[in-house]
Structure formats: structure tokens, C-alpha cells
Length: 266
Image 1 (cartoon, rainbow, N blue to C red):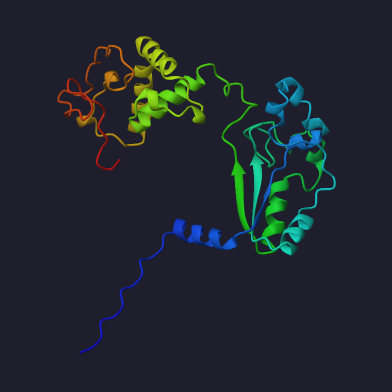
Image 2 (image 1 turned 60 degrees about the vertical axis):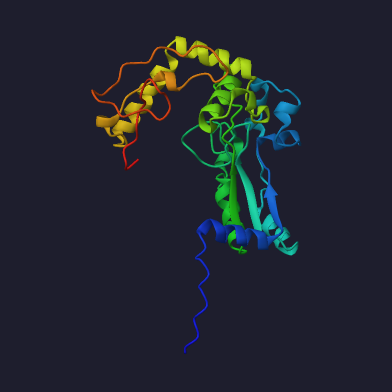
């Protein structure tokens, strides 16, 4: 009898292959570089030294790294035995180290003296230098943005806590403050106030409009219920909103009302 062939190993996903590659690399370079270099300090200096934004905004006109030499950085990393490189494209201060039309707060803006240099789009030159030496390339891009006037909204901690609870289904008392979530009482009170003011109903409307425009909702099965988005710390549930369909689908959240149901294709 012929011997049974050995079972084939399952095919690895791209993520698994990347993790395996990264694990084998062992050693790499993480470059933090931005307008804070003018101060000769690290990327958190605005927070650490409590520098006002109007003062920090004076740094770009002084940022002129004429000795920029990514080839020398890559050669140094190569000699040290490094296999990959990560570079900050934008850190929490919001200053972009690449050319973009989304903001004037960037190294290629005319307010920055380095904008006239042929190497002004510095990230492109960093990537080219390290790729030429066979390095793995990765980027760090911070979604946090201290330069943005909406980043420090007074209710941001409360909103973070509420969204975390809605996403995970956990009780407000279990929200992780290390992720920037406000206290359970604060989150519950703000959610109660926002419900009373119609904020969540408006949010439902925006989400439904966007999902509907993208063809992601089966309107024959959809209804809206703001009561399904409620504070889990206590308090009365607000009265349910009117269904958006004549025969809404049964709710999987509320025993008394139904909510928007995604289409099978969603």
C-alpha cells in the first residue's frame, strides 16, 4: 500500500508572514524626528514642558535641517546589523514630515525654511535610502494631534469612555482610564445629557444616511432606537423613537424596540 502523504501545513496569512519576518529581524532602528529637534529635546517636549501652542508654533520657521543625510543613517544601521527601520511621519504635535495638502503644518510649507531644499519631502529620501540597503520599511503616524483645535475637547474623556462601553458591552465601571476614558459617573452623566439633548438620535441619523448612501442597509428591515444606546450605569431609558419601517425586524438588544439591522451584505 502506498504511504499516506503528510498533511500540508496551513497556508500562512500575510499578517502571519510579516510577524514571522519581524521576529527574525530582532534588531532595527526607530527614528523620532520632527520640529521638536529645534529644541534639542524629544517628541513629548510640548507636554512635558507645558509649552503653549502659540509658542510651539514658532518652531517651524526655525526648522532647517541642512545636514540631513538619510544615507548616513542607513549606513550606520547597516553596520550595526539592523534589519528594519521605523520613522515618525507625524507625532502627537501634529507636524508633518512629508508633503501634504491636508495641513499647512508641514515641513514643505513656505513658512519652514527647508521647504526650498530639494530634499524637503524628507520621508521620501529616508525611505529611498533604507530601501537601497535592503531594509524593511515602516511608518509611525500618530492619530493624536495636539495642533488640532478639536483634539482637547472638554468632553473627550467622557466620549472615549462611552464609545469604549458601546464597543465592548462592558459596564461603565470597567472602562480603562489608561486609555483616556473619563470616570464612570462622568461618562454616564454626559451620555444622559446627550440623549436628552437628542445627540444620539442625530448621530443615528448621520450614520444611517452614510450607510444608506454606501448601500450597506436593507431599509425593509431597519428601524432606529436611541434607547439601545443607553448609559449602563443606571438611569431611565429614554422613550423609543419611531421605527423607520412599517414592520421592523425584532431587536437583538432591546425587548421593547428594534434597532437598525445591517443587510446580509454588510
